[in-house]
Length: 145
Image (tube, rainbow, N blue to C red; front, side):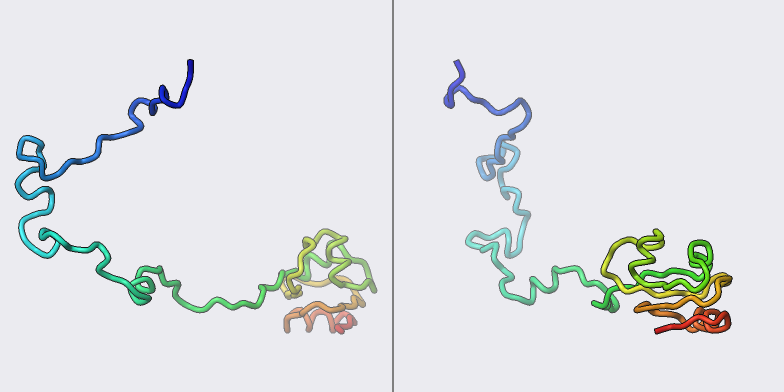
């Protein structure tokens, strides 16, 4: 019958603790695994040598450089707009999600000028536009609000 008193740990899951300073026959006699001289070889040495905030700060890994808290904008190139939009349509967060160019997230959107824009009269609402994209849009009669 199974009872708490009959439970034993699984084979190999436990190790016997190291018994130091119990004579040379134990393999840990003479210096009792402490080495020859020095502060840690003596009795009465506390393991709490470094207390306080500074040692804790020194142990934390440091990340170099600067990381902005502002969210990164989702980039949409003008050649992608040319594939999906038609003349005189409105480009906004809602239409970009509907057409599948971006996912439904709260990040800002920026239109970039990579590729060539072939659609005339696009109207941009509440999206950022790079300088090169702005030139292409305005050349084809588009409006940026």
